[in-house]
Length: 323
Image (cartoon, rainbow, N blue to C red):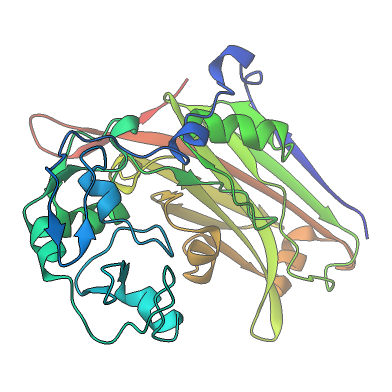
C-alpha cells in the first residue's frame, strides 16, 4: 500500500551550518572523571591500595564496573564486589575463585561515606558535587545527561546532545528538516483499514532557536485503528513548558482542534503515545474528513508552535507567534 506525506512550510530548510555533526558523547562514554583524592598505602581488610589508584577506581566493581554502594562485599583475600554481582557469581570470588561468604568491607564503605565527587556529566557542563551516596540519584535526572534519539521508527541506541541528534536524524534517519513555526501535512493512504502500527515519518521543525519533533502515526487502539499527531520538544521538560502548539484536522464542514504543551524528548515516544497526549482521530471520523467513497484516507493536518511570554504587569501569558 502506498502512503505519501507532503509537508508545506513557509520558510526554507535549515542551514547546514546550524547543525553540528561532532558528538561529544563518544568521548564521554569511554572516559572517567579524574580525581585527586588519592590515599596513602594502607590495608582495608585486605584491600591493598596503590598510591596511584584513585578512590573512584577503588570503588569500581570488578565485575560490572559500576560504582559500589553498601553493602560492599569481599572475599577472604580482600577482593571486593558489589551486592548485585555477588548474587550473580554464585558465592564465588570472580578474582580468586574462593568462597565469598558474608564478609562486608566496612572500611571501604567508610571511605565511600567520606567522599564528595563531581557528577559524571561534569565534562558536559554539570558543576554539581555530591556526597558519594547522593551522586547516583542526581545522575539519573541530571539536566546535562545525554538525550536518547527521538526517532520512533526503530530502536535507535544513539545518544547525544541536541545539535548532534539533529544531525543524526537528518543524515542517518533521513528526517525532513524545516524552519518555521507553522506546518501543513497531508496524509494519503489507499487502504485505511491496514494499520500495522505504522509510524508516520517524523519531521523536525526549527523555530525560536529550538527544535521540535512532529510525530504522525497510525496504531491500533483496542479493536479499531486510530491516527495520532503530537509534538515533542528537543530539550528538558522545564524548557518545554515555555511553548505551546495547536493541531487542526477537518473536512466536510467539520474540524477537530488540539492545543497543548509539547512533551520533552526525555519522555519516550511510546510513553507520550500511550498517554494519548495529542490529537487523536478515530478511523470513522478520519474517513468522514476524507470525503468521497470512504475507501481512501486523505487527511490534512495543520499546526502552529508559539512561545508563551509572561506579562510582567498582570502575570498572564501572552502567546508570541513567529513571523
